[in-house]
Amino acid sequence: MHFVLRLRVAAFAAVIALCGGVVFASDPWDAAAFSSDPKELVAAAEKVSSGDAGFVVLLDEANFSFEADGKSHTTQRRMVRIVDDSAIEGLGTIEVPWAPWYNDRPTVAARVVSKEGTVHMLDAKALIEAPAREDLDIFSDNRVLRAPLPGVAVGSVIEYVIEFNGYNPIGDAGASDMFLFGGYAPTQRTRMTIDGPASLQPKIVNKTDLQPKTEEKNGRRITTFES
Image (cartoon, rainbow, N blue to C red; front, side, top):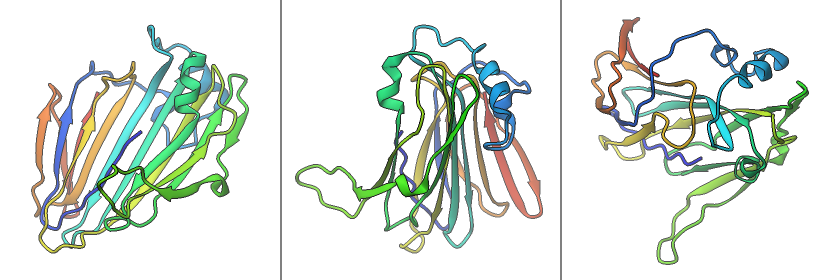
């Protein structure tokens, strides 16, 4: 997983790339984070085909919430089922890059549900903070949080939520980010929302066939893309 957040005062620019088929249904991964019944979650996940891949993404979701003063809050949530041993090494560790210049230290919560329905929660003390990997000729204060996820095995479902509080250190500076819809593994549900003051108009570059749903409430505009 790789995610870099930069903030802006006046607007938010997002690039949305790649597209899957549109599906809307009630599944365990549509419930609030960490609230779905473990055994029901595993049973539903087993019905989702992974094709030839070693894992399948059940949910890939991001919410970008920003304010006129440059402050923002970003929430990422992902749920993945391990299908083959080949996926354990890559998905058995969570890694969260961040930049102190733009963000407070992220918060990370995760659980791993075994094939039998046993729940293993990530101990926050297991998170290790270290300098981010850099090119030999580039130096920065970028950091990364890493932790091994407990109980990852074939048949288990991994769920994690990462939250960033951000701010813009440069007045009136712009920022951009990218969110991908599928493309790297079979994906069951993908959702992105952009939430901000109705007076601010984000610039969205949509490279999919998806049409957003937009609503305004209490002076805020919420734009949602889902596939």
